[in-house]
Length: 259
Length: 259
Image 1 (spheres, rainbow over the protein chains, first blue to last red):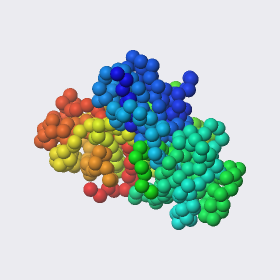
Image 2 (cartoon, each protein chain N blue to C red):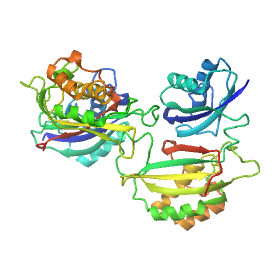
Image 3 (tube, rainbow over the protein chains, first blue to last red):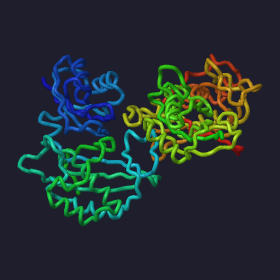
Image 4 (cartoon, each protein chain N blue to C red):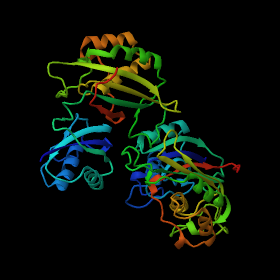
C-alpha cells in the first residue's frame, strides 16, 4: 500500500542553495530526500509547497512524499532528525489523504521579512535579519501596504526567471494578499518586520515588495507613488530586491484563509 | 604619542577557535589584530578582558591596544567594521586612560547561558541556544543558585587546562559571584537562561555550573546536594560541561559592582 506522508519542516537557509534539489550543491529538498532514501530504501520524491531561494529560511514549510515503507510517522520523524544537519528540523510527520499535494492543495502562505534598523548589527542577529539603517516611518509604510491588500497583478514585483506555479494557471501575475503588516519587534526599537499572507507569491515578490516599501519608510517615495508602481506592472520601476536572509516562510495554509 | 584605545566588541563565536590568537585557526583576537595592523601600519597587540573558548559568543567583550597611529576613533571603528567579517562587530572605540588594561582593570563580568527546553529545536535558534529537553523546576535551580552567590572556592567547577588569570593571583579557586539568576525567555515557555555576574570566572566555570544546575532542575540532584558539590572542591563530582554555543559574554565591568 502506498502511503502519502506530510512533513512540516523548518530550516536555516544560510548554507543551502534554496529548497529545490540541484546537482552538486546543498539544498533542503536534496538533503531530506537523501535521508528518506536511506530510511525507506526507496527513491523518494519530496514535493514542497513551493520553492525558497538560496539563503531564505523557513519555520513552516510543508512537503509530502509517497512511500510503501511501513515505518510509523513518529519513527520517521525521529530518524530524519537524527540523520539531518540541525539546520533542518522535521517538526511533524503525519499520514495525509491520498490526494493531498503540498503545492496544489495549498490555499496560501505567510512570509515574514525582518529588518534591523540600527547602526551596527549584532553578529548574533545577522543571519536572520537584514540590515537597513534607517528610522522607518511606520505609518507611511502601512499606508503603502493598504494598496497591496486584495487581488492585484504583482508583475511590478516579480523577479526574472521561472514563475512559481502555485495555483497560477490562468492567473498571470495576479495574486490575492489577505494581510500585509509592518510591526515593531517585541521590546525592540531597532527591529521591524513585514508579514504577508496571500494565496500565492510570484518569484522574489516579497523581497521586491520590501525593496520598494523601505524607500516609502524613508520618505524617498510616497505611499501613492508606491501604489502607482504597483499599478504600472513594470518591474523596471520597482526598488531593489531585498536580501534573502531577512526572509522566512512562516506557514503554509491548507484551509480557507479568513481575510 | 602612544594612545591607549578601548574597544567594545560583539561576536558570533560559531566559526572561531575562541578569542585568543593561535596559529592557523580563525580567532577573534587574530582577526581584529590583522585588521588593526592594516589600519595602523603597526604590529598591534589587542589585550582582551579575558579569553572565551571556541564557540562561545560575546555581546560586550572589552579589549584595548596601544598605537601611535593618528586615526580618530570614529574612523577606526568604521574601518574595522568595513574590514571585519560581520561575525565580529566593533560596537564602540574610544580613547582610554594611559593605565587602562582591559583584563587587569576589570572589576567583573556578566555571562548568560541560554537553553531551549522543548523537544525539537528551531534551526534559527540552534547556534545561540543549547538544547536540553526538560521541564525545569525553576525554584529548585534558584535554591541551588543561592548557594553560589558570595565568595567561594569554585574548584569543583573549574575546567582542566590553564587558569584564566584575571585577578587570580593569590586567590586560588576563590571567586565572588554577585548575582546568579535563572529566568524564562520573554514570551517563551521553552527558552530559559542563566545569568551570572562575578568578579571573575575560572576556566569553563559557567558551563560547568550549568552542567550541574540542570540536573537540579530535573530533580536528579537536590539543591543541597549541589551545595555539597560546591563545598567538595572536587571536579570529578560535578556534572558535564554544558556546550559552548549556549554561552555569551554579555558585559565586562570597570566600576565597582553593586551586589
